[in-house]
Length: 182
Length: 357
Image (cartoon, rainbow over all chains, first blue to last red; front, top):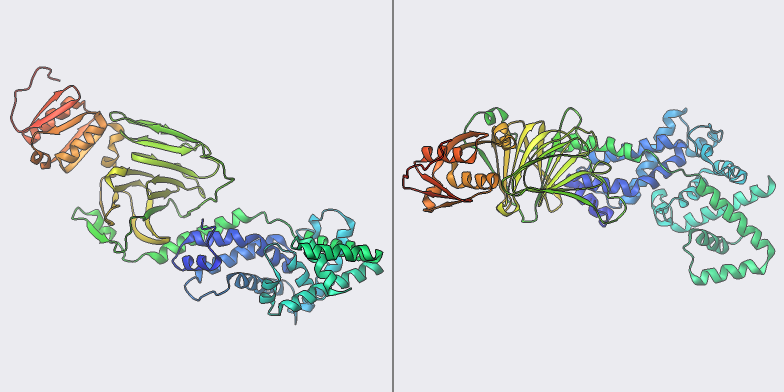
């Protein structure tokens, strides 16, 4: 595999119909993309499916357009696909805020909750995270994914790096407040 | 709580904090008890957030699915001139294709689809450690049959050698060949069988085919017995489909010039050597001699080099060398005389000596 090729170099290879380039990209980004996707779907199996479908789509469309920033493109695409997925599952909602709030009741299977380390405090905090304003929740969790830095978050969400930081700190602050009162 | 301190705590948690930051953080912690509480809460929050994520466990399965898709789709999109297979099955002159941008560092990849399932799987290397190989080689004069851990059979030709990694079944099914071998590969979806001969790689899932690739000859010939093979050339990282091969078709590539052509072939005859059957169709004595030298461990010399260019058509079914000599002598009108391990071919007719077989 082309492990020392940059993402952009791999895209060039991809346009030349090289399936090994696709595989290199896949192995490189699969895990963080699944994590990001699960942030929305809360269903890890579904998240993995969605990410795999994305790579199939990337292969199919490899000649169609140029991807300038591969990483942002990947996460942005996953985000869109995830949101579509959620919308299909529930009634259509107006905004992501609605989606998050209606999903704070979580099912037991296939969610991060079902695989908790068992520490009660973690459970509590995770429940609180689900009740955060959508943007704060997204930034907080996204920042915990390996291989995503604040620049990627900024690009994917279309906000400045500074805003990413302040949103993160607000989220932490919010949670700290809730920890005190509960 | 100030942003500054939160930033430091996050950096500490992410292990991206620098020395100055660490010093500052320490100072802030020591200045006030409350700060320590803030610190531990924040760490707890970050840690809980991280625990949200679970390791994906469908990566391999999902890749297999994607790969199946790219194998069918990608190859189909790549086919340039359609090969008229009907005409290929008739006997006539071979079609020629010339690959203009061929570089010495080219590698040819053959991909085959057994049934409806197509797949090309490239396994990522496992932990880096020195590979252990099993190796087999045949001197001139003998060929052997090797059964691999996955039940695939390799008929290894004379003067040929093969080796494979001891981790054969577990990861990649890969062998390195210098010489000639006939492969009967057991079918395993998602586990391709790879034959590497110099810069040429043959990748199959489960078929039978003959590969003749003597490094010194700069020629690779692949003949398909069963199954279907797609031939791809890998030029500087770019994959291009050259041709499809069906049973009884042969692709011959000159690795020096880049010229390759495909033609109809009798695959059974090409791989007949595994049963000591040799078929030569309009073949020069030079090539016949080369083949016999390898299979019988003899040295064949021509008194006059022109003699070597005589072309013959002959078929030898499991014959001892002396009978082959007789046959060739009769067909060509030349004289074959054997001394020890050497056969001298001359134009003079000589009386046959003793030993009629």
